[in-house]
Every structure is written in structure tokens, then in C-alpha cells.
Image (cartoon, rainbow, N blue to C red):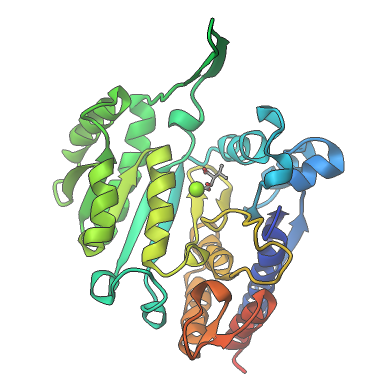
Length: 357
Ligand code: IPM
Ligand code: MG
């Protein structure tokens, strides 16, 4: 039996997560696995219900599960609260930290059926398939923050901190994953300006001696942002620090047609956390417009990385390909001739493919 903690969160989170659960249940039924789902509160939903964004009950639920499936957190309602109560800084970041999830894997894969859904030209994006490995528990998002009053206003200070150990463990994962793929690793930094990036680069170069079979290419983050839209096919595996990875993966998602397609796996601790790369999309929440595929694909990553159920993960991914090939489209990936479906119907189509109607 596999225990899965289910944290829908806020906004479209409550619409997309049930679709991924439905798909996991279908996979469990087909392959004879017993997945036990237990729901927990997180983010604004938890704040409204029990007064804190990451209740102890939710943390305990995660610790007592084999994997965590998360939707999205945050929304305008909670944006002006003190930092420690906000869904981002008060729940999601501490949850990642508590579970020791220092590595966030975000695969950018273009599905053939969606080649016209991207805003980029076909010849630029055709065949892209790369993995961004984002460091997830260090850097600017976790360094010391301060505000001070001055005579004329305030100063705000954020600190970008990286230790050799933090860089080694994420870079090692980069080399290991690159080794299993095309053996080319892009390490993205801003070593021409930022000190933590200089340590990053030195450390990655040292570690590269252990991986002579992997070609290591250093790239500045600004150049990488440009190269991602200029010629994304040059990338196979990218490893980078927390904030650069946050920004570059939103950008990378649009190469695949929609941010509604990009899944993610946060690993490194005993219990993995799986969530779409996108946010809670308050602008479309409650309208059944959200694309559940990033979450459904995150469920596939859960099966692969936490349970080592590779056939089952592939069954979900293949079902998604079939559904897209059949023309079903949520609004974010709609194109002329597409068959419009809402969030729930998209989930149903994936389930039908899995159970083999
Ligand atoms: C993401 C999100 C989060 C992050 C926010 C909601 C804190 O943008 O998962 O990419 O920055 O990590
Ligand atoms: Mg982000």
C-alpha cells in the first residue's frame, strides 16, 4: 500500500488535484496497487480554516505519507498578510525545507499535438525535451531578509546564500541525470556579478572531474533566458540555483505551449513532493477552465520517482499524449479545430485512456 498526502491548496489547486487523484486511482485499479489518499490543508485554505498556512497536522500528514501531491497555493486575499502567514513564505517554502527537498525537477517536453499552441515558431520548438533542475531550499528565497528604516524611507535586504555542500549535492544530481540522458549539462549562474554564483561555478568545475563523460557548459542566466527562446534545442539538462530556476522554468513552460503542461517533482528527502510548476491562477479559479495536465503529469512523476512504478508512470504520460492527439483542449492550449473540454472532462479523457475504453 502506498500512502499519498493530497494538498489541493488554493485557487485552481482544488480543481486540478482531484483530476490527478482520479487518474492515480485509475492506474491503481489497472495495475493492482492500493493508493491511500489523505487530504490536508495548506496555504490560504489552511489559514482561513485554522489560522496558519502550514498547520502541524499537515506536516505530520506529509511525514506519515510516502509522497505528497500538491496543487497550488496563494491568492490576492492573502497577499497583504505579514510574511510568515502568507501561503508562499509561510507554507510552501517551509514545507519544501522541512521535507529536505533540495532538488526540483521540471521537464519541458513538447507534445507534437501542441506544436501550434506555443507562441514560438514551430521550427524553434519542434522536438524540445529538456530537464531543468532547480535548487529548491537555498539561495535568495531562504537567506536572511531585513527591513530597516532610513531618514528618507526604508531599505530592504535579501541575502543569497549558498554553501559548497548545497552546490555539490544539486550539481551531482545534474551530472547524474545528464549521464542518463545526452551527457550534456548546462550549469546556469551569474558568476560575472554574484559571489554565490562564483562559488557555484568553481564548485561545479571541481565536481566535473568525477564526470569526464558529461560535457559541462557554463552559461550566464541572462544569456540562458535569451538562448531558451532563440534555440532551446541546445539544452538537455540545465542545473541552476533557486530563483534562476524559478524564472527560467516559467519561461521554458511556454516553449511547450502552456504553463498548464509543466509538471514538477521535488526530491532529495525521504518523501517527495509533486506539484505543477504553475501557480494558483486566481484569475481563472472556480471556472473549470484550468488545465489539469501539469498536475496529472506530476502524478506520473510521483509514481516514477517516489514509488519506482515506471510502467504506471508511462501509462499516464502515454494517456496524456493520446488525449492531446485526439484533439481535447482546455482553453490555455486551445487551437482551431480543437475539442474544448473543461478541467474535469480533461481528467475524464485521461482516465478513459488508462482504463482502455
Ligand atoms: C514555483 C512557485 C513558488 C516558488 C512560489 C509560489 C513560492 O513560483 O513553484 O515555481 O517560487 O517556488
Ligand atoms: Mg515559479
